[in-house]
Amino acid sequence: MTDTTINDTRKAELLSKQVKHIDIKSFDARPIVDAMSDMSFTSRDLGRATKIYNQMLGDKDCTVVLVIAGSTSAGGCMDLYAELVRNNMVDVIVATGATIVDMDFFEGLGHKHYQALEVPDDDTLRSLYIDRIYDTYIDEEQLQDCDHTIYEICNRLEPKAYSSRAFIREMGKYLVENGKKENSLVKLAYEHDVPIFCPAFVDSSAGFGLVKHQVDQMKAGKPYLMIDAVADFRELTDIKIKAGETGLLMIGGGVPKNFIQDTVVCAEILGHEDVAVHKYAVQITVADVRDGACSSSTLQEAASWGKVSTAIEQMVFAEAGSVMPLLASDAYHRGLWKDRPTRKWATLFDAN
Image 1 (tube, rainbow, N blue to C red):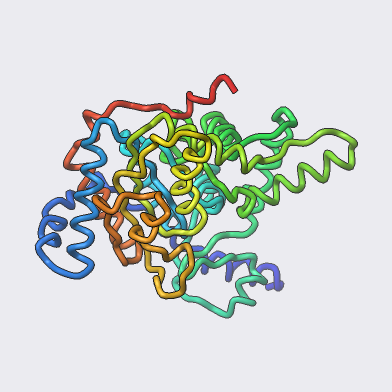
Image 2: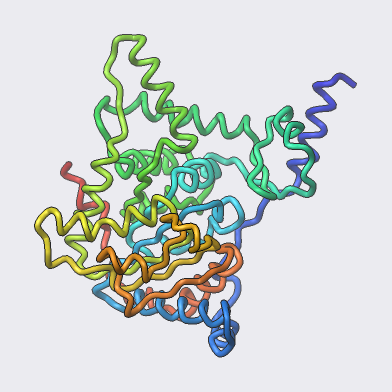
């Protein structure tokens, strides 16, 4: 056999087992969450965090913001997040570009993530065009298809400044027309008017498509589109001002976490001193608080900045993929979402 055939065979072996995304509707986590609430350590923290999330859903005045950082979507929580949108359990999403583009939009195009049954030398993976996220694989050639699709979307749009929210809405529209997966967060958010913000949008597969679009347009002497991160901050602050009561369900930390928390301060700077801090807050993270980094700052620390109330908050120090299925399944089966008003915050910007 030729080297190409050998490599193709080896690549197929390594990409033979797809990651299966958990279905929170298929099991009822209420009994185990109730039992864990009577335990100690992280179990009790999770029980209280789940109770707080249910409080958010039961509070008809509360806008729920889902904040996602890290790789839980690639690891099996992708359908979980989609179900939260489908069932009116979140109203706004703030996430990393990787979560939205490299993971969800990527699968929306028909591609998959794979379990690493073995982890050979990473140089070997590179030679086979396989990207690795811990014990999860992505086919780099499929990821390049994602890059090219973003490039195609750019070329179809009017060359002007877009917030990441506005551009991701166009991605959702693309999936409605051309997508291969029903349970896509980007697609469902478009259909349910749930805005998605990625404050560091170009730090993702989208960045490659956007750069190629700009370079090609510049070479041709034509105008090009760009992503306006300031507009992201302004639009999300607009939502906070109009929403009033808000609750945060945060997975991980980083830029998305700080971005949503800063809307309270931004509203004050704009003269809206009556805007309340985020009333409810849950954060699931493994970040260590001792290094002083923003990603690991506790919710109590955020209170000192005037961002979050310490009255109804809970930190859960756990790997999110192991506890989010329990929290989400519990909330789904308790059914408080059934009586929530739909907010459709994306329509706030339709006239813009």
